[in-house]
Image (cartoon, rainbow, N blue to C red; front, top):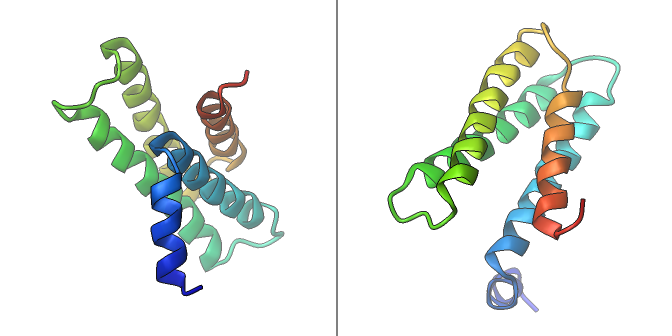
Length: 116
């Protein structure tokens, strides 16, 4: 099976919630691997930036007029996205740890999975 066939099959069987979960899992795993290294390298910066871009994309989607989530939930998630952006800046300047970003992502993943 070619990669394109696999991706097509995945899109037809995966719900949007599953896709979001999978993306958070990939980004979070990448953050964990980068944060576990003893020295900060380019991969660390790429991981933090990838996480930041994920949250900026979510923030944009949450701000869209056609987003159907309840307004209260949208507001809370947008506030969280703003926090992630600010904390990411601190992490990239070596003023904060990556752990809180991982914890936030894991919490979101629990919500997407329907567990607490």
